[in-house]
Length: 357
Image 1 (cartoon, rainbow, N blue to C red):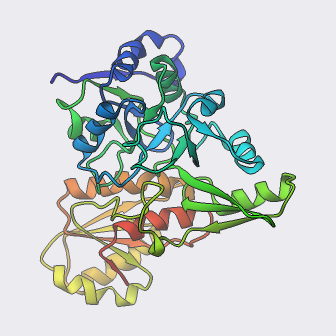
Image 2: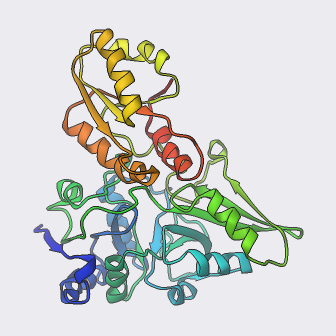
């Protein structure tokens, strides 16, 4: 299969709108198309066509019990494909969309059961990336889309990664440059009891627990609203991607470092290979000196938070891909404070990690 690369700029989308018409029509007709969002690149198909959705699972090697998120171009479209059951769901959609959040809602029959792993719920997302929204709007269909990578590997945050993995396998890849956020959307599910609402954070992301708690405080609801993380250890049947299976892993081993002084117990088994270091300057400097003291000279360093914590999110999966190309056998990752976006980043690192020291 010939894969056409459609390069389009966010700033020039109105001028270059015609470039999206062919990939949009391809989506509508049942093909799989890769496209950028603000979080990661997506591998999309018409969510109303089971045969189209099956292609995503086959291309990724993804387990069929791992549901997909359905992407729409506006809030008005939500009511065609899902039921909004309460005022908290409504207000979340009003407040945080378009944006990097997915809301688990009661699905309507028009959405393929394969998209939702047979569940009666569907994760609905309205991305704020204008390329994604315009592509979905032109396709005139809801688009089921997981991240555009082989299942279990680091999510794709740049077009070259998507091209490397899917060129020759799908008809169109829409190149919108590197993504801005770099980790997948926050997934939430609202549960209602007689005495309160609970917003369950099924998958942490760019919209944080603190953001949701501030939202609850500022909004007015008929009942109290609590915000809680889902305990992923209790998950048997996932309602969201990223819950059940090991995810985001590069080819080599990942070690999350809580205590630098205990690293040697892990590193000594890999002394003859290339070691990757991912962290901020102080972490990199201290750990490099320790590794050199232990006789390890073949080291690849990447600084991931050049400006702020958002840089860490944006660079995590991109760094994993670089380390793979450098043939590292082990990556030592600095632990960040698990608060706000730091919690979401550490969630991804933990899911990719072989060891935590």
